[in-house]
Length: 179
Ligand code: ADP
Image 1 (cartoon, protein in one colour):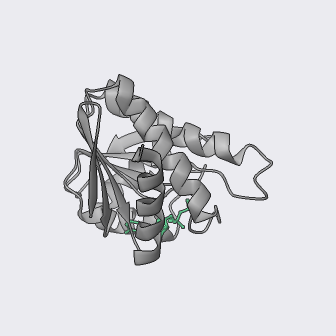
Image 2 (cartoon, rainbow, N blue to C red; image 1 turned 120 degrees about the horizontal axis):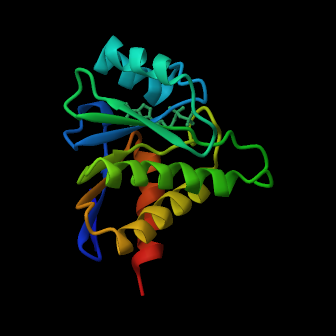
């Protein structure tokens, strides 16, 4: 586990399973149809029960680089924020912009709903193929930037599912926070 202070808030990296988190919101790495799938998406719908999918169906979908919010069903978290990251092609199809934008949308929803604690998975780095080192740098710099002007968010956690992913985020965070 790694923990740093950013302005008035706390930023943590933890190796684990996001469905077990007790932050007010957890983020899902969803697809643009909000239709469920494998990876973290499947795990969240399995753990949270059918109510989340029912709400997703009503919302209908979400463009790449944006996010939509539902309740958390049976999860400990009160809300799930479904973020749609980009499928990685070669890095020249606005993938960095879309990835940063997906994180920003989640944070904007959090501020709007007065959510003080939020847990993120590593969006786009599973089935969507985003290179982990690049994705970790974008994810962390985007949330760090946001926290600097949004002290209302007290805690941001990244829940990394493997030791390798965790180490990549740890490296990226060290580079971003050392002087
Ligand atoms: P994407 O389609 O956006 O790439 P994936 O779900 O395939 O989404 O992968 C995103 C990341 O989520 C990967 O690092 C994967 O290992 C991780 N992951 C899978 N299950 C969980 C879980 N239960 N909690 C946290 N992270 C998870």
